[in-house]
Length: 124
Image 1 (cartoon, one colour):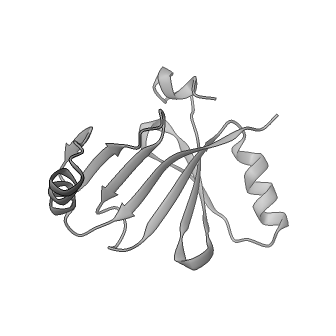
Image 2: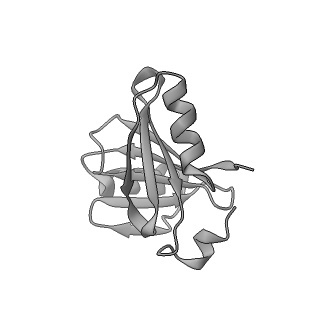
C-alpha cells in the first residue's frame, strides 16, 4: 500500500545566509546545515526540514513529500489531468516527480532508491 508523508518545506531565496542570520537573531534557532546557497533548519518534527535555498527563485515555496510508490502518484496526478514532470534523479539518490500546486506552489514527490542513504530508505 502506498504511503506518503511531508519531507521538507523549501523556500527560494537569493541570500540564504541573510535569512539564516535573521532567523537565528529573531527566533533564536540554529541551522542544522549551512552551506553555500542552502540553509536547513529542523522543524521540531523529526524527519521534516525547513530549507532556504537558491534552488528556487525568491518567494517560491516547494513542498516535498516522501513516498514508497512514486508510480502510484504519477498515475493518480495524470488521471486528474495534472501535468507531471519526471521522474528525475534528485538529491540523496531519490527519484522525484513534480507538479504545479495551487497559488504557485511547487509540489515534489520523492522516493528513496537503493542509491539513497539507508536512513532515508527506512523512513517509510
